[in-house]
Image (spheres, rainbow, N blue to C red):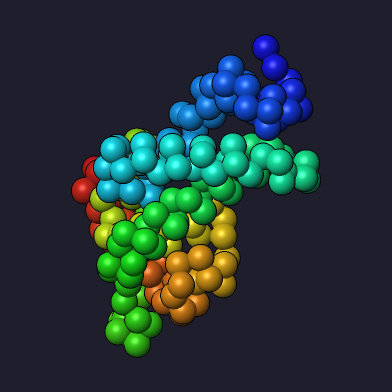
Length: 177
């Protein structure tokens, strides 16, 4: 219907049909991202709507560097992180001094576990673990970036990630034969 460039131009003009097309094309992908950072579907929907509002407001500033989808995804992730920070700041964060020695996840076979089960377990992680785990393991941010985004120390980000891996490993053990 619309090319990417046409969608951007039409959305900037306020064309509702183009906005709906952009929303329809990406809402499933971005909703899945929002779910990973929130506690409920309703909360994820709120973050999604806020994220799309930010996308539409920021479109005039899009510089066409990198992929358009990647640019939008970053806005959605930042919206989710800001929502978390505003509503549940440091709910489960633990300082590095409080952690015990943490072993790496063992290289056991998890081939019988399906992706949906893993994502469900990630959704149930304590908030601090979930935010850092999503940003580092799934989105690919560095701990320095995560620390800045969540307003925590870099070592806290690292410890939360290590604890999240350990927590996930224990939960996934139940799925193994």
